[in-house]
Image (cartoon, rainbow, N blue to C red; front, top):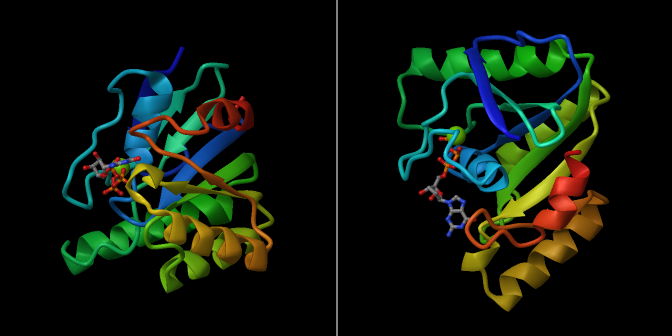
Length: 176
Ligand SMILES: Nc1nc2c(ncn2[C@@H]2O[C@H](COP(=O)(O)OP(=O)(O)OP(=O)(O)O)[C@@H](O)[C@H]2O)c(=O)[nH]1
Ligand SMILES: [Mg+2]
């Protein structure tokens, strides 16, 4: 059963873990709530909700961390730097990552900041799985464009929706 454990400013567990990262407001915390079938992560229509590393146990008792989002302009410069450092340290120092789930908005596709983050994460040898969230809000041409982008980048992409739970059996399999 999914369970909230604690919030930390750096990795406070040595066990192997899955990480959720992505631009602010892309739906990382919503996806965790949808997987958990209960409200264990705080979400908001305003970007910048998650400001710490939030640790959870998932359905198979594995550690999952919900990271703060990147790319949110409307927070103080100090706070932004603090969050960027928290994210950078997490990936740079972590030897025990099972997989990094990098979320993008399926309507928008990849942004420059996403490419920078993907390169940064890969540079430490971590494995990445792209989750294109909010698919419930996409049309056919947006989905076709996304599929092409993923193919070109040779990245594993799974279309998901925290709202409709599209592809959740596959996602649960990846996070078990
Ligand atoms: N339609 C739709 N809305 C979604 C989906 N996932 C998330 N949302 C909405 O997107 C907004 C942001 O969701 P959050 O889960 O707080 O996003 P986050 O990535 O955790 O944001 P930060 O913590 O700020 O980085 C909320 O209003 C959610 O209800 C989805 O799959 N479909
Ligand atoms: Mg969040």
